[in-house]
Image (cartoon, rainbow over all chains, first blue to last red; front, side, top):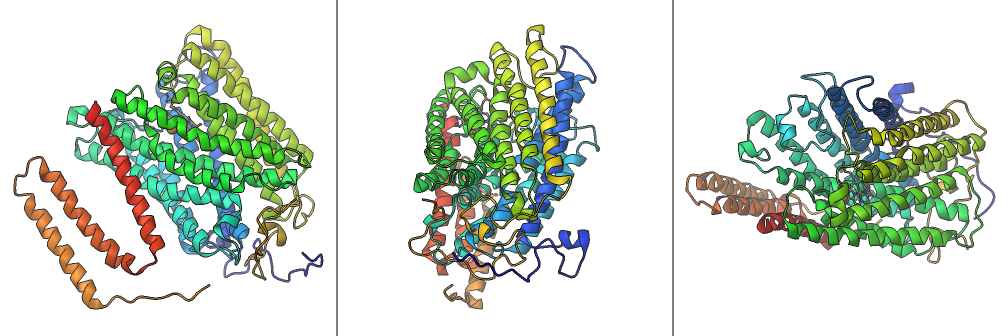
Length: 536
Length: 94
Ligand code: HEM
Ligand SMILES: [Cu+2]
């Protein structure tokens, strides 16, 4: 590449050039970069609300018995906490924010394939989230079913389940349309010379994710509508007293919601796969294995859903078959971990904030994955199902994994997004607090879970007190870390960022920071012997 | 990028598709009056499958598109069938 950069007269995408100015210019923009940022702001807001709800739960659990509010309020809080965190934070999460912001840049496209549909997805997202939140304030009080809406309770409870379920339904549509958009984008808009097997690995992970979004989400959509139909029209799908089968609900729910955990984690793995070669200055080890393992996770991941149902009363045969399949899906996940570690081996590593968070991801994801396996084993699962052990497992993966990858991605692409740097020292401090806080919050949950602390309980026996109190203080450290991060990123303007602050090799680092509206004024190309990660 | 080959479906085949779909709708409604006991749901699903096949082939242009799309649809159906089989297997063995 030549050193001489012609400096672009074109304005950056952050400057309003269209018909509108200010907020309206953002709300009507079909620019993938702006839509990505709007998702990011929305997700940060929902995340903050979810965190506050989480802290409220930890406060109530500080001592056994009632502290600040009663059991019904507790049920309502863990339900909306789960709905917000799952449906509006981690499921759209990385795909909506960085899929939008970075994907077209990384494959050398000017935008996604359907920019207007993209904006429409964003509005569906906002609408769905608003409906879900409205469930708190209308009807007979906040829903108290948990985010899983298990029948028959979700049919029988008097609380406002319909609004929450309908909100999740609308959010699902947003997810489907985003997935569709990304699939078409990757098939039709890759730069010349970029074959599928030369595509960077974050796009690859989004490709696998997008297929899950398109194929699995409709199933939960229908299932949620069935709940509404059953509540309003008394059609007996799930409630035995109406002639339905509650286990059918669990099947339908997890047919979506297990693959949904891959909607969350695959893009996170993709981000880590971008960050590690950049900061180790090494070409990624086992490119094809990583690309294909994404697809393998996506496809095998369809057939493990019933590991959530071992104690539901389904058939014994189904239980061991699903246990076996669950063990299979761990293999492609492990392949990725080996490849990341091998990539770092003998690299020239510079420990910058994105890399720190990537390391944090690997550590926490390993703990989450290993405990997932112990949960996937039929025999152990029976003992720890519906205990705090499960809570610890999925928080290690969803927060320790997806959450930390999200933070890593923000620290990685922030200079590209805003054309500004942030304070590296502050960013490192945010990592220290988030990481220690996280482990202090969730590790004790493994232990009290094994001791028998049930999940979703308002009260507990005295022997669990110490564990809950550690968790509370961990939560406080975590919040401090999150606040430090927000201050680092958004409080004041940092120094101007160069086009390529980290020495990355993918296309987005060859264009100005922040990128111009049309991304590339010369179409980027990959030569026959070039790959996405040509370090050495 | 290579130029797109555009296929324009003549009105006549659209009309035929419409008539076929309407006919099948009438059949769907009619069979509900006949008592087929266990086969009722099966027949309804069968008719619905034929209808969606026609919609996919003509209205959604699968007939004229590249093989890639057909492969996609095939994989999707395959996963779908497997998912249903797994679920039903639980019932069979319970
Ligand atoms: C090595 C891979 C994994 C295995 C073997 C595994 C296994 C399991 C099992 C068996 C359960 C059910 C526990 C029970 O309720 O008794 C479970 C729960 C859960 N897992 Fe995983 N898991 C894995 C990875 C993931 C990933 C990648 C995510 C998300 C990104 C995730 C999110 C969850 C969630 C949210 C729950 C709790 C669902 C609920 O509310 O009941 N897991 N996992
Ligand atoms: Cu699962």
